[in-house]
Length: 251
Image (cartoon, rainbow, N blue to C red; front, side, top):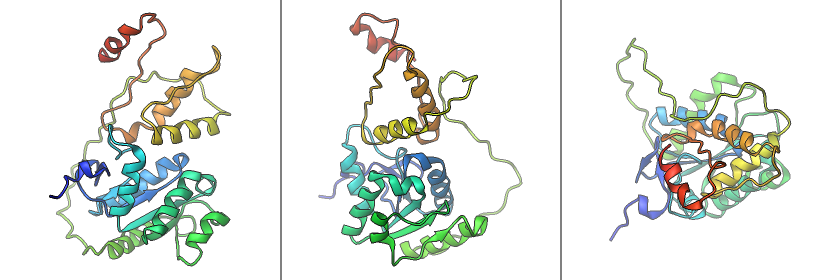
């Protein structure tokens, strides 16, 4: 008997729909989440089903299992190539997995960098798309090329509407930050990467070290990846652990 797709352990795909097999797995560093989401949106607007973290992993299923199954299901693994990707062990692991599975690896360069020696082993003979040199001209070509790789025919364009579409921002209760948060970029990137791989991440440090501020900054960066929103729950005033579930439920 065939397993339901959501239970097969790859989570969501195609704009967050559960139980839809992905055609493209988007591999990226957490520091490049915005660029990766933009590429994902361009592909999905053209009807190409994508799997991307942190949007698509489901709770209750080990993240590693979902990642492996998503790579196995996809026809193409699109690598968002940047300096951050060159330094990311997670990116290298995903590309190694894709290569071992015989997947098509398609690098898309978003910064003027060459692949690291580790990544070069897997992409040295592959032509990459250059969003740095080609600019906006690269995107239609990329969509057309990916469509060819996954075996899709070009869609028939719907009638054009002059009515603007409403854009709904993800819900949240994150407080407005009145000052900038500089010098902690590496910390924020590491926290994001931990959140991709774990359902619970605890920040530990002395009072005034900026743990809450860092959590809020990461929450803001991840808003677009969670359609149900990102929520801050103040637990500092609670001394009785049995009251924590009720405090969370009130948010």
